[in-house]
Length: 472
Ligand SMILES: [Zn+2]
Image (cartoon, rainbow, N blue to C red; front, side, top):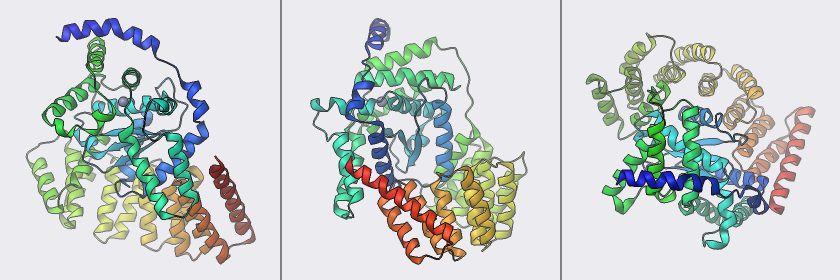
C-alpha cells in the first residue's frame, strides 16, 4: 500500500509542483501590502488584549529565535515576522495576515523533538512567504466565508470608532479566521515542500515533519470526534504523507540534538500546569526518578514550580545547584534573579540581574527583569538610564516602552510617562488609544518645550496615520 502511494506520488508530485499557480501578483490587486500590514496590526492588537495570549517574554523570545532561524534560510525571507504563544492545550499553530504566526502551548508540549516543532513553524512560515492568505482572499468568489478585505475594514472601522460593541464583533471575526482558513491541497503541499527546505537548511532533522504528522494523524484516528484544529485548517492528505515520507527517505541521516532552550521552555510550561503543589510534586518526582532529557531543564522546572508554590527556601537550594555549573543560560539567570526577588531579597536579585545582563547583553527578557527589579527597589533613575539605553537599540519594543512609562511615572514625569505608554499602545496596534494617551500627557503639560513639541509632532503623525487607515 505504502509502495503504491509512493509510486503514485513520485509521478504526480513534479507535475503539481511545476503547476503551482503563482498568484502573488494578482492577489496584490485585491490586497495591498499596506492593507495586509494594517490588518495584521489590528489583529495583533486584539491578540495582545486576549487572555489567551501568553505574555511570557522568555518563551516568546525562544519562539522568535527558532522562527528566525528558519526564516533566515528561506529563499523568500524579505518579510517581517512576528511569533507569539497562545495559552491553549490543543495542538495548533496558525499564520495570520502581516506575518503573524501563533503557536499553542499544546504544540510546544506535544512536540517530541525540537525538529518536530520546527517543522510545524516552518510550514506556517511558508504559508506566509507564499502569500497563501492573500491568494485565498483572491479566491473569495468561490467561498462564503467573510473576506479578509471586508474583515480588515470592519476591524479598522472598529479601531477608529470607540463603540465597544462593534470592536467586540470585529475581534470575534478575527479569531474565526484561523478556523475558516482551510488551505487547499496545493497550498499545503507547497508549504510542506518549502518548509522541508527550511528545516534541512536550518540544521534540523527533516524527519521531524513526517514524525509529527504521523503522530497527529494517529491521535486523530482515536479521537476523530474532536479532530485537532491543526488538521482541520491544514488538511492532511495521503499525498502529503507520502510526499513527506519520500523526502525523508532520501534525506541523509543526521542526529540533531534539541537545544537547551527547547527543554527549558517545556519545563517552564509544565511547571505552570495544574496547582502549584501538584506542579512541585511532578517536577520533583521527574528529577528524582531521572525522567528527563536534560537534568538542568528538569531542575529549572522544579525551581519554577517551587517559586510558584512560594517555597522559597527549597527553591533557593535548587538555584545553588543550577548556578554551580558553567556560565548559566540566560533563562536560568533570569529564574535565579526572579527567585531572589520573589523571596523578598531585592539586593540579591539585582546582583543576579547585573551578572546576567552583563553575560547576555542581547537577551531582552533579562533586561526587562532587571529594569523591573530596579523600579521595585525604587532605583528609578537607574531604571530610566537602563531602559533608555535599551530603547535606543530596540525602539519598537512595546515592553520596554511600558517599563519606561513606569520609570517616568515613578519619577513624576507625567508627560513623558503618558508619551511612553502611548508608544507602547501604538506598537500593540491601537492608534486611537495611543492618541488618547498622548493627549492626556499634553494636557498635563509638565514637559520642557522640546518634550512638548516632540509629543505634539508624534500625535500629529499618529492622527495622520489613523486617518489614512480609516480612508482605506
Ligand atoms: Zn498548512
